[in-house]
Image (tube, rainbow, N blue to C red):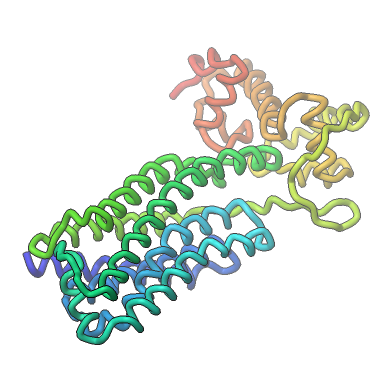
Length: 376
């Protein structure tokens, strides 16, 4: 059992370190991967500090105790910043670094209380007994223990705040994607649904550990196993980040300036709408799976924000739906001539990003009956 526990402790900090270095080495100019690399590096230190603590090497741990408190409060903000970096430009991320301030403040406060108020012997005594349920009589020790409760409340606040944020971010992000991309599967944040459930579960378990302290000194194997599960959670997210692509939701207008992909007002322009229809009917650009609004703008000579507004106003849909309506119509006509076409072949021919996207579009346009005629 001792060696198994040791294995869990070592794996908890070595694997995040390996993933972190790998992400930094392969990230290139991919900012989300770099941020995830930092988050995993932070997780490496958190679990390394846990390792030192469970070895009961308190004479070493007391020097990193305050930094440990700070880095624990940076785990959730690191994950949040990773998600935000996928959906935002670099300039919009600067203000997000305020999420690391609580960790800094709590780390500095701990350094003041734990590092200055307590003597060397008191530090060792506190670290050896604060999980045992003992009632400290010394006022300085009681202040440090009370600070620990405040630290737990901050973790509770983080769990609540970031859980809500991880629900709101994908909704706005997918709306913006559909204004630019004809296929959004590669840029999807649908994984945030299971991630948010896992995040809340892990967060609440973390709070239970810190606040209710269910695992005492005699049962630290269960605590080690619990912390190992939290570490695994960071591994999974790190591994997922290797395949996460970041779209550039910015544009160059005709005058060369860069604007955000956001429609501030709807514009009625029948001439441009008719030109757009003729372009789609004659050139059939919708057959390209990687078709974007920016590509269409370059071909018909307009800027992206204006065209997006025209599509919304004249046709009542976003760019993604507009393109897929043409794809659905094309696929319907194609099947009349080649009824034996499989769904996989139809996906490639029609410019869809995936079979699931094909099914979704056909069902939405009330063409689900076509699928019954398509061979598996």
